Amino acid sequence: MEENDKLPSSSGTDTVQSKEKKYMQKFKSSWLENPDFKHWLKRSDKGETKAYCKLCDCHITCGMSELLRHQKSAKHVKQIAVTSKYGNMTSFLSGHLNSTNKALEMELKICGFLAKHD
Ligand SMILES: [Zn+2]
Image (cartoon, rainbow, N blue to C red; front, side, top):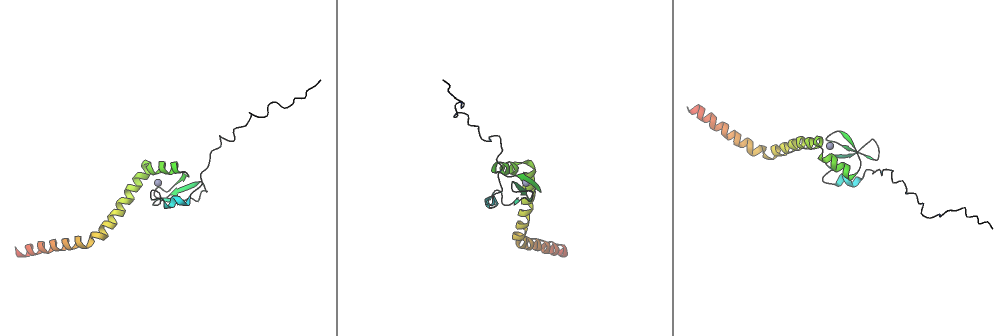
């Protein structure tokens, strides 16, 4: 009597499907609305899985953690500091220019007056 038991146990040998394969996050347009990213984030022209930082002029791998990491990187923080400084300066100047100018004018007039008076 021959039992042709060719098949071993078929179950139990499930190959773990491509666990090694890295999941590539594609650029999400919703990131552009994220208040943390929208000031510097752009779609990259290097591919769907890349993002671009306007401030640092560099391409970042897509992914929330990657973006957050980039956002905290020294290079990026420095760029933010520089640009926000300028941004604040211009809004500060345009907002306060008139009153500052008037005060300055007054001061100059007083100085002139005093100078003349003396
Ligand atoms: Zn950056």
